[in-house]
Image (cartoon, rainbow, N blue to C red; front, top):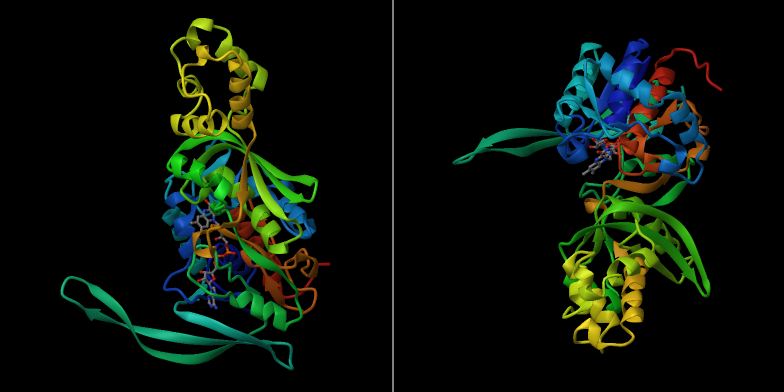
Length: 442
Ligand SMILES: Cc1cc2nc3c(=O)[nH]c(=O)nc-3n(C[C@H](O)[C@H](O)[C@H](O)COP(=O)(O)OP(=O)(O)OC[C@H]3O[C@@H](n4cnc5c(N)ncnc54)[C@H](O)[C@@H]3O)c2cc1C
């Protein structure tokens, strides 16, 4: 049984190892020079490879059934066992699982070493351009392979392409594991082209786990003032249509403010939903409501600020608010609410309602979202090949012996190891199934 895996990333390596163990002959083809290139960049070079909290609502997918079956079969423990058996010791940092080395390179090393140990073949600089189903139900995988020479420059060596030729690989089964455009300069992903050709449908893709842009005039001053600030808070994402304001999702933790809008993990977690709303154009506006004091109720904050009358003597509104929140945020929000209150708080009879207004704004600050970073700035891609057309073995329901795994599918997870978890789990399940000589799945 000969299997070709298109791509040599996270899901492909897990699939390759498992299929080899089942006795198949496996070849990985990748357009890059070495396997697992994207894994190297994960978790800021430390590779957050799974998470002890694993639920289906950590993921987006048009049809969650395949994802649910996958994480039910391969839970956190099973993925950790898989790596332990490869000799990789893991460490748990508040539920986020990393290699004990805290180096993503060790993850790639153990995977590729195991793949080679079981006799797997890897062909670098091999770009897959198309796949054909032959009359005898085998596949031909069309590629272009580039050969490079090392040119010695004054201070360094440079790889220069000197020959590109086409080559076709024949096999019994093909696994498409081409990932996505996220984190790359690629303009397209061949996985979708192949899937479409064989009759699969694609959920349009958007960048996910990516900074959000908020360029509206009403927020411009806020972002100029708060650029560079990191503050804890809660983000509620809303779609606005006429009078209807629908809460889509929420997250809380550290929010980073940039000149263009919002960044940081909390923003990343809601970014797929925000981009999906912007793409579908089913609402008039996409808004974020920021709660910058989410651990306290408005009455509690007001009580804290006004209970000591002396605190308000010879104190401006801005100085008072600086006692409870980052000074740049305090400055810009105070400016908005109390344009007419320039002096000390104690000079105004209605100071309580002015302070209450500032607190209200800090807990309900509205930002209009109008875009995001592009795929190159994103960690993953939301959308992809629809999973309702994929069996729980990851074989296509349309074409026998053709498999799709990993991020090329319409499954994307939150930050926290969820995307790699799905890559490993889909890789292992497909490898177990494709590696068998006889199909015994559903
Ligand atoms: C900066 C960054 C940080 C991240 N951090 C984390 C993290 O900490 N935890 C987490 O869970 N997830 C993280 N992710 C997401 C995670 O890396 C991916 O979800 C995961 O790698 C997807 O695995 P995959 O096998 O589907 O695709 P990939 O690992 O991307 O592999 C796809 C492979 O296919 C190859 N390929 C594509 N087209 C062709 C072609 N035409 N011919 C031949 N080869 C081709 C590519 O070169 C690539 O090697 C991060 C992503 C980025 C960009």
